[in-house]
Amino acid sequence: MIRRRSTPWIHKWSRQIIGAIAGSGALITGYLTFEKLTGRNPVCTSPEGVKGCVDVLSSPWATVLGQPLALFGFLAYVSMLTFALLPLVWKGGESNTSRKQLENLTWWLLLVGAIAMSVFSGYLMYVLAFSIKALCPYCIGSAFFSLSMLVITILGRDWEDIGQIFFTAVIVGMVTLIGTLGVYAGVNTSGNVVESTDGKPVQITFTPKEKPNPEFGWQITTTSGEAEIELAKHLVKIGAKEYVAYWCPHCHEQKLIFGKEAYQIIDENVKVECAPDSPKGQPEVCKAAKIEGFPTWIINGNSYSGVQNLDQLAQATGYTGPRNFKYFK
Image (cartoon, rainbow, N blue to C red; front, side, top):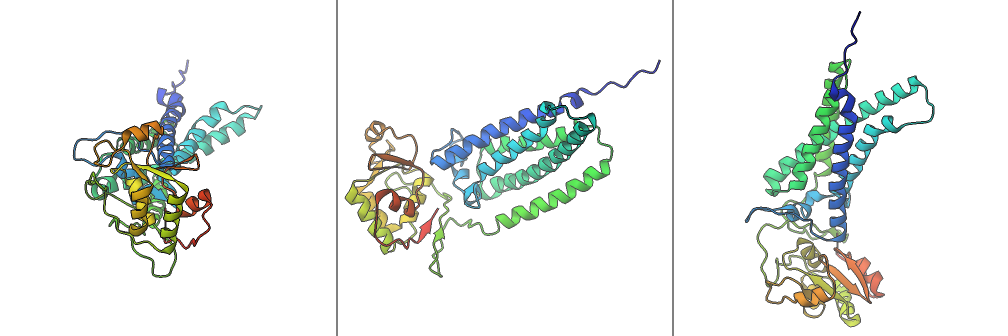
C-alpha cells in the first residue's frame, strides 16, 4: 500500500497565520492613523533622553502625499488580510478549478505584497536608526510583521518554481525601493521651513532636534504675512481658544503655520497652555474643557482636534479677510 505524503502543518495554517499577523498590523496602523489625524500622541514609552513615537510621527517621513504614512500601512495590511483569508471564506458553488485559480492568484499577491512591505519597512528602519535616531515600538513591530508575513508566505506553500520566486523578489524589491526613494526625495530633513520664492504656500514639517523650553516650546522660524495677522486678530475677536502643550510637535507646527508675528497675538490672547510643568500651565482649565489631545481649538462651542490649516480656521470662524496664507500642513 502506498502511503500518501502528509501535508506539513505550516501549509495547513499558513493563511490563517498570515491573516492574524495582517490583522494585528491593521490594528496598530489604524490606531496610529487615528492618533495622527486627531493630533493626539500615541501611548508610547522610551528611555530617558531617547526620541520616541511622537518624534517619529512628527517627522517628514510620517507623511506621504499629504496623508499619514500609517494610513497607507493600514490599507496594505487590510489588503494582505483579504488575500490571505479570501480563499478560506469564498463560497458560492464555484468549481474546484476556479477555487484553485483563486488560491494561486492570492498566493502571488501575498508574495508581491509581503516583498514590497518588507523592503519598504527595511528602508524605514534605516531612517529610524540613522536619520530620526528614535525608538518606536510600533514601527519596529510593523517591520517584524512585514518580514514574518514574507517568511510564512514562502514557507507556507509548496512553490513549484523557486527561481520564479527569486526573480519576483528582485523585481518587486527594486521597484519598491526606487518608488520609495522617489516619494521621499523631497523630504526636508533640516527641520527648517524654506520660504516660498514663487508666492505659493509652503508645506510645514517639523522634526524636533532639541528638547523644548517649558516657557515657549521651540522657536518659531516662520514669518507672518498680512493674512495670518488678520486671521489671528479675528480669532481673538470671536473668543476662540487653542489648547496646547509646549512639548507637543504638532502644536509647534500650528505655530509655524501662523508665523512668528501672528502667533504672538495667538499666544497672548487665544492660547491656553495645558502642560503642568510650564510656567504658563493651566492644567485645571484644560481638564475642565475636557481636552484630550493637542492642539485642540474651541471655536463657537465646537471642538477641532489636531493641526488646522488656516483656510480651515477661516471657514470655521466666518473670517472674511485676505486668505493668501503662506503655509499649510
